[in-house]
Length: 425
Length: 139
Image (cartoon, rainbow over all chains, first blue to last red; front, top):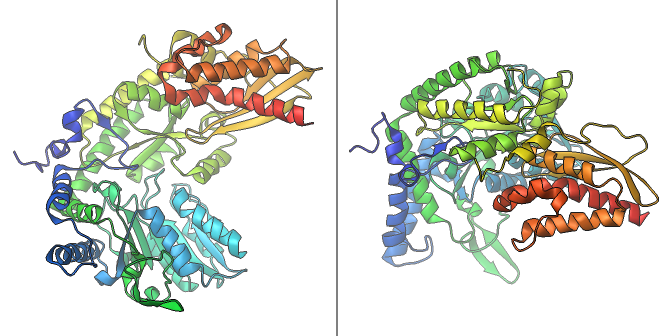
């Protein structure tokens, strides 16, 4: 049996063998792990594990080679110019913190500003908010246009010659829309600001080219790309690398150390003090191979098919509200959908769906500013006012099938029937 | 769904809660948030000489939280602040410990023992009350 037969990619994911009834619609939170990745991790731990960049013996030399091969693979995957732009860390959150304290903190001054969007995940919000407060810089927040995309015109208005960094999500983890990052990059460049892109929700769905995006920093987590937990990626454009100071200090990043001081290495490995999580890194490389074997065109076709079924099902249910007007949202082909049921709290939706073996996210999805933004924008709409403070989110991956969408909507019917106050079916 | 979280008594309280969205004049207030799921509740309390006269709640919260808040608004009027705090403590202890029974007036919450992840939802209004009482005691 070909595990990667595109007719049913569920076969490649052992989670569905142990839980055949599972309908997994929370891949935006973390993706399930395919067998080739699991086997790769297992083989590494069984046969290849050693401390990379440390030992002079063969096993360690080979571990170092694995690390650098993975770095090359990731560089090619996001079309970076060289492997010396790719640092491994624990995840996108750590990558963002590294940019904040390695690159921006040493140069940020009172009166400077950082611009981000209201659609950011807390990981790409809190670190900049904290840094601004620490230094006395200003945090500026760009809104969204009526379709839900980052408002490029407003971005232009907010950026000025005191803007040091523009930090934006490529795809919102609540709205699922692919923002026009190249247009945002032009705005950032025009005012001399660096551009950081949070690619956490993008990397599993589309080819990424950091040069075409025009970003200086790009971050993502391996676990959203079918790699399992433990590995994140920080891309740093080479001209920014020299200004990055090591902030996580430890073994493997120094040229020499004495009681008087230390000389640090200049290469990208300066971000990787201590023992790297090589099992997770080789898993990421295996996941990249897996995704590339499937091919982006297949991934896109499948997403479009799922979207079509989703919007057809949604059309019959006016009591389901999307954060953005559903007609506008459907045209945008989002990569995930967040929604509310009239009079039903998202926590109850998720709990009831769990009884039907459907896993989806409820709450604010680590994007509270975005939920507050829409609550404010829809304050005149009494229905939205009641329900918009949280949402339920269905997110899809290559293992999802049309039956999963039907199961979701059947369960949502039950949830509405059971919970809704003042039903308006 | 006999072992279901959402039993009839609880659903009835969720659908027609006591004290929901009732603005109490000259009331003391306290807001509480469950950051995990986004439940938000604003509790209002009117009392005279340490005796609870009325309670109401506002906000966007799940069925368990609403049902629990409804019971709170229903059961606490007439009790002293101390008695109400004792009831809150008994509920919290009973939900955490299989050997203890949930106080009889709060029986619709008893099956939450089998759904520990939702206990925090049920306790949110009671924690808001305890914090509100703490503010009264401090003054």
